[in-house]
Length: 322
Image: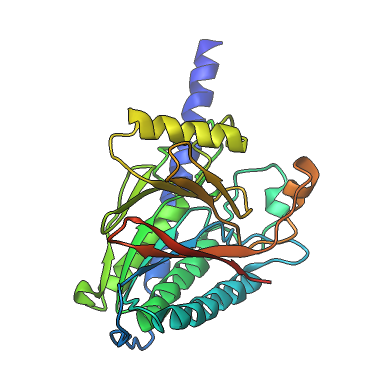
């Protein structure tokens, strides 16, 4: 009996190791084929006034997901629509004050993955390697477009539960994640451009990311860190954030950005200053959400403008992507 169980354990571990190795091999192969495009830097703003910093919260692209109204092609079009709308809104802001910097928060679940639901294999339009390749290229193009709108760009990247390799019971480290592989590849390709100080993007193995813009401080999480099996009520989410602000997390912050639930929401914190900002998804017609949660959401992402001197959000936009 014990010998059989030990053999089954070795076989299970071997399957997980094979999955990880195959994913890295696919990432290496795809690295060689991503095309280069011309990159034209944005000029500095000419308006006067107190500078602000744009913040793009881009999350839950679910690259590879297939529903009646969503697939990889629709994902690309909706992300491109966000670029266009962000550029127009930034132009309006610049009529009053300079906006030369942008911080992009990639919030996780950028890929759909393969291991989250028993029926998932029937609800994708591409397997892991193609998801990795498609989303990596879209991340690269997103940063390139941001550099055409803003003079300086900084990226903070978090990974989600859909990028996890294997079943949640498999012994794969949390940070060994397809989302993180997407980010690693995109960052390496962009570093080849030798952009100097125009782009800052540092990798982090932590599952909570720190965001600092002048005196503004916030945390970036995916959202599955809270609750049981990745679900928590708004009250539970706020209580979790309050505990972190009370000393559980060893870095003072004002706000928290999260995705995971595919809906756009905001909850104030009891201190009267901070807030939890939950952003939507580019996805639509999610069968799982409709059946198990009786909920659907309009595709959207989040755009903020930060006052770095006062350390707070100066204005915010829910950017619809229908």
